[in-house]
Image 1 (spheres, helix red, strand yellow):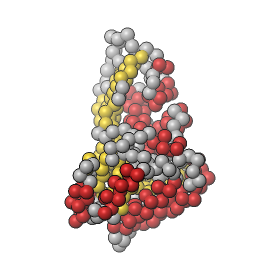
Image 2: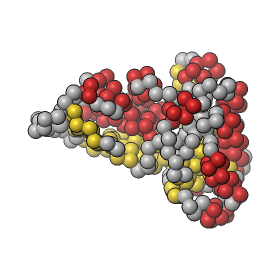
Image 3: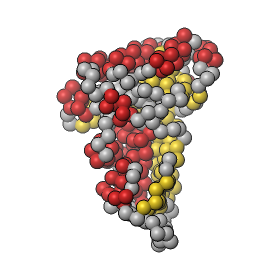
Image 4: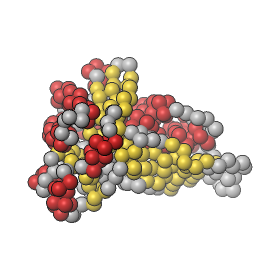
Length: 327
């Protein structure tokens, strides 16, 4: 039996520039961090006592005799690719799916990690990220970028650069005190709306947004300088979040909604310096940058929404339990 633990990610700057059709021609970059909210994938070989050969337990339960009969596209394609059969897979998570935290990609990374471990193979973070990208974007033909799979595999607060040759992960060097202050100044809320990221991407696909994405790419440099230069007031990070969110809202009609805009304005009026909706847009989680003395005011203004405390994490996907079984 194998259990993997894979973090969800919080993306701050550069979202959209990690789309392959964009960065192959224009280059891209994102700044993101993983947080202490995880998905857990439990995989074991299925004991030969049942009429079915594969059992999958996620938001649904699937019991099939043939891998081709599996409905879940990511599981089906991963099992076919790695020639997995006769297994039981269960999925559990700290936060709901389709909420802007890269949950589907974290699942893909954690599942691949579990499959390889069950086969007795060690696979590094780079390979897990690469294969999760291939699984979701090629085998499953799902629209979206590359940052989620990379963040889930590597973990930590990073700048990820994209170009025609692929990507590079660059950890952002920041003092523990400054990093803690950044963490403490971020407040995350659940809007109550969930959506498929791929649907948002497709809805925005025809918008002429290359020029705005170029501006968003340039903001990554500015954000990195704010984080790494201890002489710069960290509140500038919050102001830049506000700017990048307003810019992102212009990259597609499906990015925001009237309800999301009202939630955002409520947080800003209560004292937040800036913030953004996490993920492709349309709903899910929203994060605000709030100075400590204004956080109680924001809590009161956002009392109708679920507050999610979190801490940054640095490890990425890992196996947390292993025991051998023979049938």
